[in-house]
Length: 418
Image 1 (cartoon, rainbow, N blue to C red):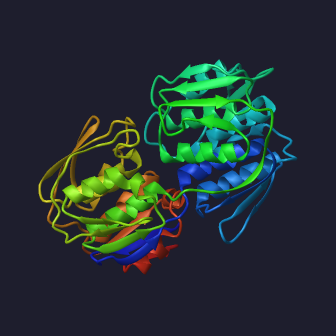
Image 2 (cartoon, rainbow, N blue to C red):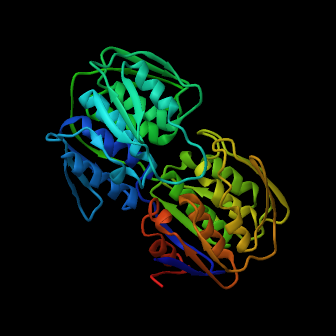
């Protein structure tokens, strides 16, 4: 089993190039199933979630070619199955986007309930309600979601909670429904806009992505297209936080600075200097960090996917910080692992009280999920001595070449099979 081993207290300096957005890629790849033609997707992140989805599409009958330059070509013309088994989707949460894509194309879909990170109850009831509103009949048997419809018909759909996954999934299926679908109380995250832009390139008619009301006018057919995925907001934020915790001076390149505004504001509050370029952000930290309070929210608020990394950073701020998790019920299960490195964190329901400490010390820890793994890496960068991180399969799900990128900035980090 592989580990990451970090010898901490190395100042990070230089520049790092951000990969394509994981959360956009895992929606866009399934959406390509509906195209009658060849889709070429550029700027894909080279991560496990992408590899798993490509394998799943191949099992369904698609022809997929992933080049060394992170360009994926998908020809879905000869897809001959609408069933995605548990074995093919068990590793990734976003496999549920296969439901909307297969339902849109075949008016049938059988997809195993998704796998991926386990940090609390993340039901797909909003997805199911949306598909039913479009006319699908749905049963769940032996862990398989089975859906069928004589035809899909557009409908008004109000989401009871703001759900990124449900917004994207319903939007995908509605592209090939008859008539107009209006999704209200829709999520507004950048990868929703990116997925909508991709679908529009295929010939879909989607308006309003990025607002809380999305209007989809159904079309009979979608065609192939070429598309480049946006940069990864969460990867960018992770390296910004890594710069801050290491007293570093790092320029994060190939990003959209507007996507980073909530994090940039918090880093400024803590005493970092932030310099924005057209497609870059430079973070300069002297290590003298002040505490702050953070509340995770739907976009454009502070992202829940940066919450664990921010917790690690707040652990060395000089004072008490409060971090409130407003998106997922049980996202603090990684806290005990951070405590092993010396963090002083008390969790009370959805709130973490973080008392800054003067130093962190290396320890042997395990990633409990993708972003928790990133938080352990960040803590390890600041710790005295060596930190050994296990379960790095989670980190590999969402971070491309993390040890190479950090090493290029001056970190002492290696991957070991010991």
